Length: 177
Image (cartoon, rainbow, N blue to C red):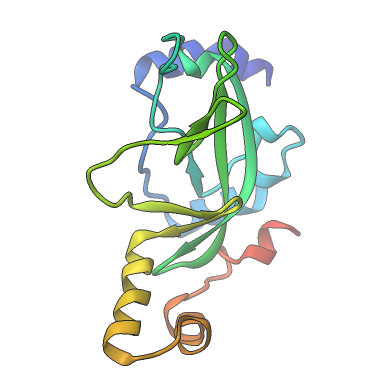
C-alpha cells in the first residue's frame, strides 16, 4: 500500500480515471485470478474485471474523488462469452461531503441517486454483489421472445451448458483457492 500512496497522484494525473478496458491474454488472466485476490487489504486486490464510478469529481463539492477513501468488494460478473467470473467493484467516498460514489449510483447515506445515461450501460448492477453484461441481458430477452423459454429454467440451462465457456483460468472456484 505504501507504493500506491507514493505513485497514485502520478497514475491519476496520467489518465482521466481508471482504464475502462484493457485486454488481457489468457495467461495474464490466469495470473490475475491466481494472485490478485490473495492480497490482504481490499484496496490492494486485483481482478480481471474491475468496476469504478464513472465520475472523477464529487458532484456536491468538486473534490477529486481519486484522492478520497477507496473501498473494494468482491462481486460476481456474468458475461456472455466467459461465464461467471469474480470481479471487484470499487467505490470512492468524498472526505468533504461524505457522499459515496459507486459504479451505477452515488449515495449520501439516505438516498441513492442513479447516473443518467442516454443508452443502456454495457455493465449493469442487478444485485448488490452481482453484475451482468448488457449483451447477456439482450440474449436472455431474445430467448424469451423468440424461443419462448423461461429465464429461470431453460435460459439458465442454455447459458450454463453452452455459452459460459469456462477455462481453467476464469472459473470462480480457482481464484478462491
